[in-house]
Each structure stands twice: as structure tokens, then as C-alpha cells.
Amino acid sequence: MIEYLTLDQYEAALREDFASFVARCFRDLNPQAKLAMNWHLEVIAAKLMEVREGKIRRLIINLPPRHLKSLMASIAFPAWCLGHDPSAQILCVSYGQDLADKFARDCRSIMASGWYRQIFPTRLAAPRQAAQELITTRQGYRLATSTGGVLTGRGADIILIDDPLKPEEALSEAQRKAANEWHDHTLYSRLNDKRHGAIVIIMQRLHEDDLVGHVLAQEQWEVLSFPAIAEEDELHEIETIWGPECFRRRQGEALHPEREPIETLDRIRRTIGQFCWSVSAIPGAAGRRPGQSRMVQALPRERVTGALRPQGAELGYRQQANRAQRFLGVHHLGR
Image 1 (spheres, helix red, strand yellow):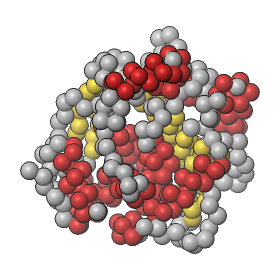
Image 2 (cartoon, one colour):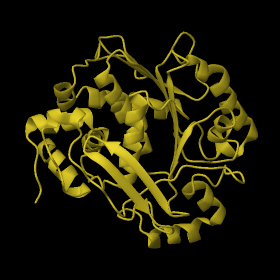
Image 3 (cartoon, rainbow, N blue to C red):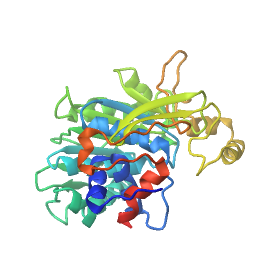
Image 4 (cartoon, helix red, strand yellow):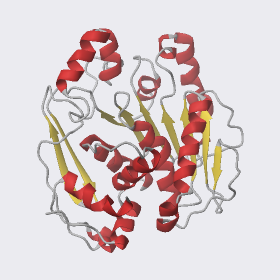
């Protein structure tokens, strides 16, 4: 039986559980579509929550295109962070300014919505700000820029890099070098606190010397990699406000079978060829060196779901159902 939340519990879930917040953002921005919630989204959400909490300072997330990485990293996460801390300064980078501005408009739409204003005290300072920048009444902001953009005088507590290069640009040594040098000489120095500031790179791997390959040679990062088809047995354990969760995926299984079953992925691989498939669907294939370790990623085979953690007690809600029931229970009030 599905246990539904009260309105207060629903609002607390959106405030405290980033995966639930992402699902609500998806519905607002895609009213004609139904979100097929998947375990990889919960893993990413848990890691981004750790970034906001200061537990992770360097995070790389590699996954194929069209798996909601931009919704999570460029739209929902800045809105959620500013909701919790309206004085936070967040810098969002994409490969083109038009795309960066689009993500900024979507983030503004979320932050100006009635449900967001109900769960968070954060308010935007002016309704007619420039598209590139959202400023709160507490002088926090979300600043959008493109790779190579001018950032003189601007700082950030969190830097979010979402696909710094187009796939075709990654084939150019000059453009890869320009992007990597801009990261080193301009972007990296924008952190307000070099000890505690966070950087997140979420992208499709494109080349062994793309930005991910470049930064991994410089310092230690936590890396999540989500191939479209599992290359080996995978296990991942995360903590959520609902309790600990354990995810498993066996070698040869699809990343999101509800959307892209194995038969569909095999057909895509035959159509585009092995090289293009490796670049687009196997996040580490473009940049993996012999002996290079990588974190495993996970999808559902087994799950352990416990009661709500004590720090989330304002929800006052114990959920022992499966994932689909949980998200239905969380979001029925938001329709």
C-alpha cells in the first residue's frame, strides 16, 4: 500500500531530499512528460547533497547524453543550494552562452515558483535581472558563463561545469587545450575559499585529454561513471534521508532500462558504430588509461530501505515501500 505524505511532510521532503526536489523541478519544466525515476539519479543526488554539505570538494560525474545531468547540476542544484543558503555564490559553466542562459532561465523559473517560495525563504532581488545572473536579496547568486568567459572580479563557493566542450570541439587539440587552460588559469582561481570551495564536473567523456582527463592528472577527485551498459558488476551505497540504500547492477545490464532497454542500445551501437558508441555511451572509454581506477556506479538489483534518518525527523514519516511507491507518495500533492 502506498503511504502518502501530508502537505507539511511533502514540503519537508522537497527541502531535505534533493532527489525529490529534482523530480519536482522536472515536472515544472516538462509538464507534458512523465519522469522515469531511476537509481542513477538518486546516486547523483546523494553525491551532490554531499557537495553542499562540504563532504565532497571535487566531484566528477560521467554519463551518456540525455540522462538529466543538466537538469540536476545546472538547474535544480543551484536552486536547491540557494534555497538553503541565499548568500551562496554559485558559478555555472556550459560550452555555449546560449545554453548557459537557457539553464539560467530555467533555474529562475524554479526559484520564482510558488512551491519553491513556500519551502524556502530565499527571494530573488529583482525580477528583471540579466539572464546570466540570478541575485538573491542576501547577495547570493547563480552566475552563468560559457567556457572561455570573462570572470574578472567574480568568485564562487561552488563551481558547476556542465559539458565544457561540444563533442565536435573535443576533436580539436587547440580547443581542448584552450578549455583546459581556461579552467587552470581563470576558473579554478574563482573559488572564494581554496580549502573548502567545491568544483563539480558533469559531462560526457570525449577524449583522453578532455577536461576530466586533464584535472585527474592534477589532484584527487571523486569519480562517478555510468556506462549505458555495465562493463562489470557494480555496487554503490549511499545515505539518504530515507535511510541507507544499496544499488547493484550486473555486467551487461542497461543504465536505464525503462527508457533505453538493451535491445535499443544494441541497435544504436550498430547504427553509429563502435567508435562513436564508445565515446557517447561509455563515459570512461575516451579517457581511461591502463590501470586507472574508477568508482563503480549502481543501479537497482537489491535495495535496503530503512526508516527516515533522525536528522530528517521533521518529515515524521516512515516509508518501507519501493522506490516507485516512495516517489508517488512524495509527489501526489504536487500535481
